[in-house]
Image (cartoon, rainbow, N blue to C red; front, side, top):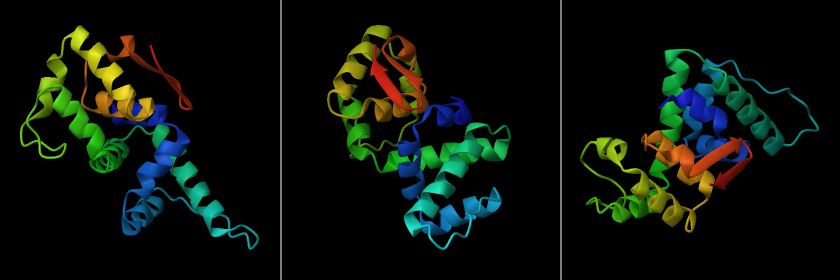
Length: 162
């Protein structure tokens, strides 16, 4: 899984959700590391300035190429997924993997061995309960094979179940 490529497929709204799931201190460090500032407009409200910073960070990471940028993408996704425990739990329950509310103490390499028919059933099951984009991000993050046949991201704003 290429975290930069995956970040490039994530919608702006979901990326903003990912950034907001991080602590303020982490967000400020990221903005500082990547030199992201906002224009100090007196008329602009605080939310507009926050949104602008998130958009700039997303644009920067979508086109990233360094190990540092890849690690930032990976950590943003991982941290966001931690808050998506119902999605993780439903996935693991469907696959009959023992878990503690979506968390496991085993390696996730079992995902890479899923057969095509199991992936199709899993995608259909999850997309009835959760946003297809969120399902796609999670399953791509854990490197589920055959995913392109059943869940495609046409662009950063539209996700469809094939």
